[in-house]
Length: 145
View (cartoon, one colour):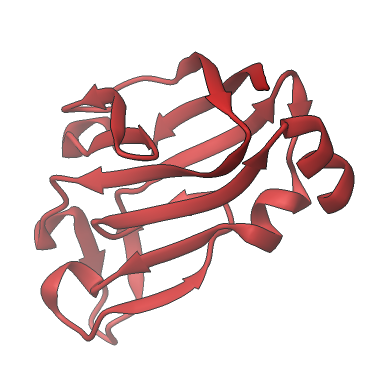
């Protein structure tokens, strides 16, 4: 049995001059690659998958130390980030389901140890946001909403 559905979201950046890049992967297939997220854009991808386990990954790249501005006390006063909003599976917005299940793995752009934390819609360091799900998608949504 296979399940066909659409994944969509809005992708935007907080600093268009930073030229932060974003890749989107389904399992081991890259389905999106943007070198510079300069303006808000709608991402949409139709997926056909066999029943089973899957992984959606958002990979931020190209962030440099000068994309984060600190004040004299070390507080961030300006930061370049990529925002992922309105993630939907077959026009059903994930909302809290995304926050409950997605993991964000990064190493503070090379300045710290690799860490995995919850994802709340903002990618601030080069790293990977991972959301694992199963198909058929409506069963997964029913079990997780």
